[in-house]
Length: 236
Image 1 (cartoon, one colour):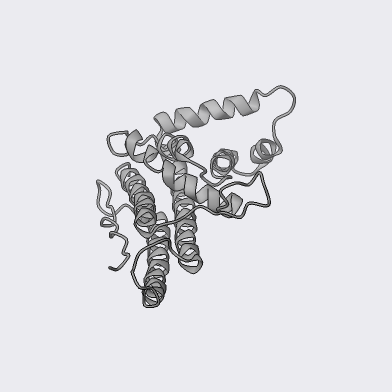
Image 2 (spheres, helix red, strand yellow; image 1 turned 30 degrees about the horizontal axis):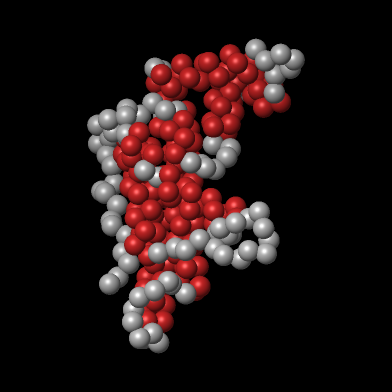
């Protein structure tokens, strides 16, 4: 049976028609979705070839099969990071300009930065001295919020959904927390090469990846990103 990702939902539109602000993050998301599907298609080919050499098409997947599933998880993570970072970078300055909660969050951040004991950061000083201080300060704020990759569901909540003031009825806590297994797998691969016990270098056992579970984890990540982008599109 083919290991196929469910399709992404239709590209979102805003209340006034096409939401231009979502174009770039949606392009990143669809590109990642296509890349991951390509890896999963190769996984199917390799799995079929290996299955021909086995008496039964069962048992733990071989190393080359496992590595392809790990690659699919990492590529999905790259798509999540790229699309969500782009979404924040494009949408947040516009939301701040609109006013409301996004502007209040920005104002509070700026007051904290300016009021720090000692001197303001170089980024703040440079922004104030620029020819367009207002835009430069917003850029500095966006840079801070998008500097690191997203390491877990808490990051997606604080640094995407809440930062963009997206309502929980459109992007629920449950949908975000459901990505915890995905992040656990992604972090194990990226940070520890998927070794099960990194405290003992003599132990070489790695986490076992399975096709169905990997497919579910990748799909959840893609669908949540699509929800985030769609919810943002409703703001413009």
